[in-house]
Length: 129
Image 1 (cartoon, rainbow, N blue to C red):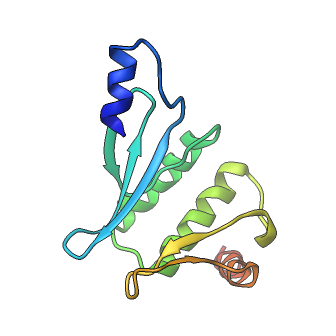
Image 2 (image 1 turned 120 degrees about the horizontal axis):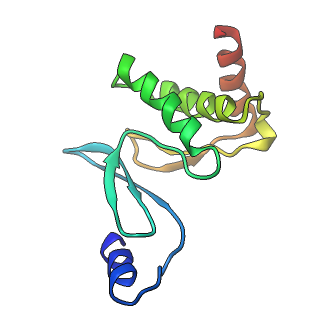
């Protein structure tokens, strides 16, 4: 994808996909990986990042968290994502306003969390603060 974006940016004088992309992968050797690809074709591996109007706030929040800790359990990673979203928006979010989808490392299946599961995470975050 990055090569296609780069080609169209330089040669065809257009951006084929005028959006930023997040690609996720998992393999047994490297574990989970997150890649960011911008419209010009620049790509890099990241631990986490935001996309959109509040991306700078999300990225700053995550950088601070990653300085303190580099390995997260699935539950901690979900909490971190929800906290970053709340921090960037400057308000509490409700379970019905957000979707959380993740890949379970043990069975390598995609799982979408229910509103009840999301609410449990939001409650835990609130109790910690």
